[in-house]
Image (cartoon, rainbow, N blue to C red):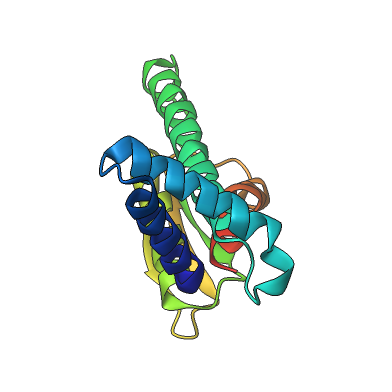
Length: 158
């Protein structure tokens, strides 16, 4: 991926010099031409097309924003609900993420989402302990996190 980015930047800079226009528009058009060339020649490059990973990162950001808004709405409903039946609890989230970077991203996304908090990570990095403000079934919460955040993180990092 870094090699593709460097090649794309070199193509963009060469495009600026060849067109003798040293503006951002010239650089950007050269960057687009370089990205198109790398996309066309992607089968000759050993790694996956680097803008694909960038797209997945953008999808992860939008997923987090969506989950953030939905959880804020849930918290507001929870606070203003008459006859509050609180069901806070800690559940164990088994994770398929292996690197420290992936686990850090997941725990941060969980903690930044209102209503949940990452409490601890097991010593073998295979379980994350999560506190939820209102939890009916831990299996539903586990599958929700695995199907959204964990899946998106694996698409970005692998």
